[in-house]
Image 1: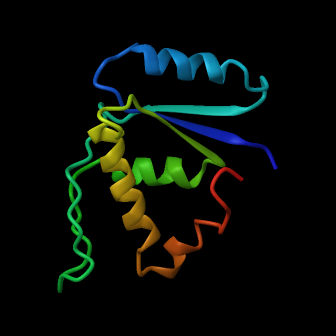
Image 2 (image 1 turned 90 degrees about the horizontal axis):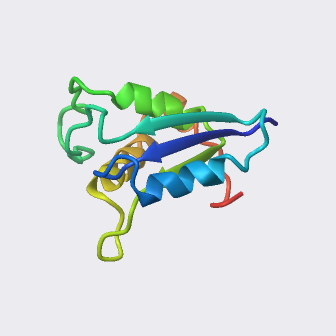
Length: 122
């Protein structure tokens, strides 16, 4: 199976050390490896609200969530390109991980089939 890397830039500083390091690492991938780069600071992704136990369905906001879901589901490898702030990832990366958690816990069976069971780092 061909590998496809999704690089998620999540630093408030464009072209910072973290991004430069990720781009240098990506240059080491085989030339025929698919790479997709998305900048989380440029995507419309509102703060996440966990509404799993609310009487209404998941809220539908005007955002780039569908784009991010499609990109995540289509990748074999996801690289979160984030600087560390006090031993934590950036707020942009944290928001992405909140949405990923939402996608994984979706009650929709079709949504759950997107995510094959694989160990982290496989």
